[in-house]
Amino acid sequence: MTRRFTGDALLIASHNAGKLMEFRQILGPRGITVTGATDHGLAEPEETETTFVGNARIKAHAAAQATGLPALADDSGLEVAALDGAPGVHTADWAETPHGRDFMQAMERTHAELTARGAPQPWTARFACTLVLAWPDGADAVFEGHAPGHLVWPPRGREGHGYDPVFVPEGDTRTFAEMSWDEKNAISHRARAITALMEALFDPA
Image (cartoon, rainbow, N blue to C red; front, side, top):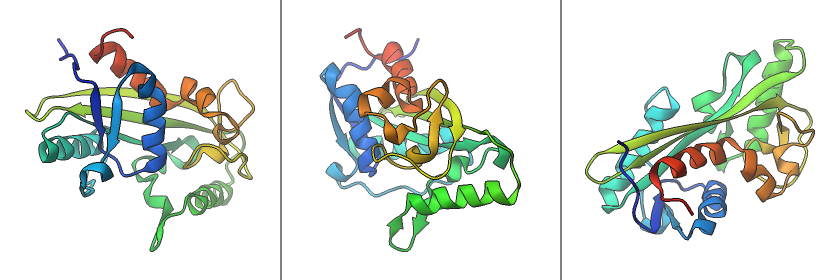
């Protein structure tokens, strides 16, 4: 049986402000105080695995061991069918520059590679999210969520973060960046993974 989570505070093992905001939007209404890696002065561990779950485990366990707190890590990315699942676990890497992450650069690279391959539209894609909640004693629990859809060009919308301006979720005509936070959080890959985690580990709200 999966261990229940009984605290009211959760450390999110991430320095990504947008991601942290998303977790706060989803978990805050349940009375859970969310802090991030920056709040605890944590360094980013090297992500050396080739899967979402492998990298999420690295981050969650490193944070739990460093702080003595239960830590939740997420590894997520965009998987584009016509690019054989790329960028996948390298989603953030495609945005890396000497001055930090530039997701416009990443979106432009994705579009350029689709064009170079002559990939016909619709450009089927999905966002994938794997969550790992790790306890200081080494135990952990794994949860996954997916948001299927397709890519568009040029980017649209000002909300969200990452690749949201080019991703249209299945069943809608707007990109994630054209939706409100509440609308996106109702159907996002991260929200679905969090829902699975909450149902398994937390008491009903």
